Amino acid sequence: MNSNREFSTVELDENKEYTIGRSPECSIMIKSTIASRIHAKLACRDRVWHLIDNQSTNGTFLNGKKIKESPISNYDVSRIGDVLIEFNDEELLQSIIMSKSDIAGYAGEKASLQSAVVNDFEQKVDALLKEFNSQLTPANFSREFPAFQARLGDMVNSFAKDSSRVNSEMRILFELTKSISEILNLKQLLNIALDLVHEIKKVDRGLVQLYEKKAARFVPYVARKMSLNDLKLDENFVSKSILAYMKDNPGPVLVKNSLMDERFASAESVMALSAKSILCIPLVSQQGLQGAFYLEKDASQPFDEADAEFLKNFASAVSVAIENTKLIMAIKRERNIRNNMERYISPNLIDQLTQTSGELKLDGEKRDISVLFADIKNFTKMSEQLKVEDVFSMLNKTFSEITQIIFRHDGTLDKFIGDAVMAFFGAPVRHDDDAVRAVMTAVEIIETVKRMTEEYKSEYGVEVSFSIGINTGEAIVGNVGSLDRMEYTAIGDTVNLAARLQAKAGYNEIVINESVYNAVKDRFKCELLPSFFVKGKEQAIKAFIIKI
Image: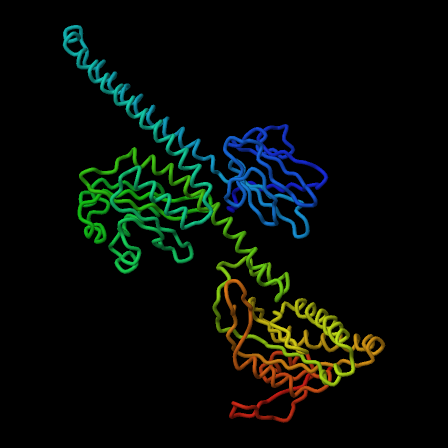
């Protein structure tokens, strides 16, 4: 949502029923000219909130679908009139966040369309009257007046045609605005919008480009009668000069004949197109430039000012729909991230992830991370002394505590491997002190296990101790699996060496590599261990033990 919009939050009481609409009588009043007086209701049934349409004129929508009644889940988004409502609470839906979506902007645009026609007619009549009065004399009145009548009659007929056209376009614009505002898939939205433009204005070629603010460039997104691949390969396939002009001069750019327009006739990209009529319409929301319609037709039947005015109004509705679609996509993306990552990383890291761009993908990237392996010493012998249910109870208690320790230091829980746990620091969110965080986690694990072992001695008759290894280096980090089931993990030599360091650690000991040592030597007392070789490494490994 853009920063200029109005937001408000309403706390809900599950024991109450709420009405939503533009009437002051509603318990939740919204400022929307296209919402009904009592548009919808909110009611809680068996601790589940329901959104109920109240036979509204323009319908009630939940996550882009028109509904009569539907249960509500966390992060669901409803549209009532031109107001977006997000339902939000972690435990039980108890609040809604409302913001104006500006869908009703078409009303103002339609009015401007009408007034433009009226103003044009009035100006032409005033000019004709001034001309007639300046030339009229008693001697020539009978000769000149019929000509005046004829010209005035032509103006009236033209005004009637223009008014009829405007009324027709207003009806079209209203229907188009309603239809596209219900679409919540960006590519589908732009494909439909471009198809409608082609059908209404008989366009030869058309293109929707989205504007990338960081790169400061237009990127072809959907096209008709032109190939997106060709557009990417041939920079002259569309006029970059016209796009640049539109960006610097906000508003429609109308070119009736590309080879005769003094603004662009010398541009190489325009000359390559031959004689074309071009109409470039910006897609602008309160967040700024979103993209542009780029339309071409034969110069023998060029676009005119009326086409530019109509498509400017249509583009305003499309721009709002784009912004709303992006909002819904962002909410869905955040939900996806939380659902996939909440098992592995802390809520704090999830909040940071949801502020970044991009979707969760099945891919990996090279990252410098600190990998921690923690393993229960002599677990096999210990488990032989215990009942199976006691083994599982003890493991679950221990690993629950360790998980919380990892999360407190913003680490990522990779996996449990029998009696061992693997975690890493530095992905998906990097910190300057990831190696320090890993060591602090290890120290807290050892201290916690020492405290818990007194409980285990009395309850199970066994003592528990851990050995921990930490290694810092480069690894491949990312999602592995399928889109239905993925795991966020780290792989590579750095991970393998962390496991080898853990194997060198004794009871309640922490062994680190030289990179970790260099990062923590000023904060922790360390002791150099005898160098050792590991399989696959030609050079001896230099390691240190953390003195607790």
